[in-house]
Image 1: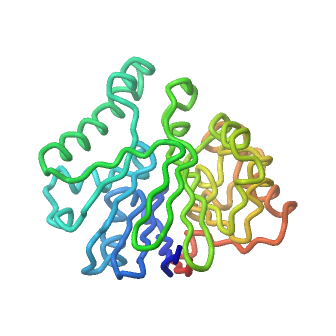
Image 2: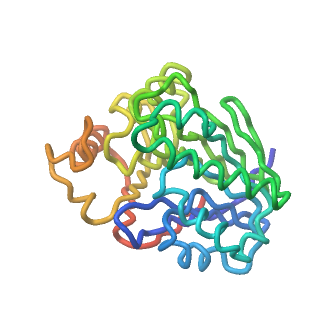
Amino acid sequence: MVYGKAELHILTEFCPFAMGFVIITSENRAIIIDGGEYTEMDNLKAHVGDREVAAWILTHTDCDHVSGLKEMILSGDPFLDRVESFYYNFHTPEFFRAVDPEKYGDHYARVVETFDSYIERSGKTHVIPVKGDRFEIDGLIFDILFSKNEKYTRHYANNASLVFKVTGKKRNVLFLADAEAEAGEELLSDYGDGLQSDIVQMAHHGHVGVRREVYEAIDPNVCIWCAASWLWQEHDGARYLGGEASVAETRKWMAEIGHQQHIVTKDGDAVIDI
């Protein structure tokens, strides 16, 4: 199989949290991954330019990943006319409302309803990726390693993150989205050293994501941190978001594993070949 050369555009953030990527394919089409808040959409559109969007991949329902697209849907943004297909596998509204009836469940349910309603109205293609799927877009190979599982009710949104590897002509990229410890344990159990990847997007902005053993198996050459300055500078023990590992602790793990280049979104947009 001949793999297509592509560029991965790593987008900085204009808000406290965001994750957005644009892949420019060998056919000069765009693939969007998440995108972030509405404040990120002008930058995302600038990287897409006037290209067709072959796919918009959504990893999970958190606002800092998909609310920009949600607002584009609600406002009827004509940019969406250029999107060929949407790829997502979200929990159902019923799941969200049942698992968290008192706090965020209804919010997540309404996010899903917004996307599903748009797909129905627009007639756009909706691909539902599940673990084990492989698909190809313009010579890039996408392998789905993890998708939602209703048994994960702790951190149920993050642990429903779509985890996938993109293989291009030069190297591959593992996208962990916001996967946390439980999802990471399943990845390690299923794939072990097969997780090894040239580039990794650090789980959950590098904070409270998968555990060290997962990164040891990935053993990356390049680490992408979707982290604004305030989060990148999070000191050991601070745990501003709560949970098990601060950014400082995750950075320490990666230093001990060694031999990585680090790309941090606080430093602005970046482009690398894949």
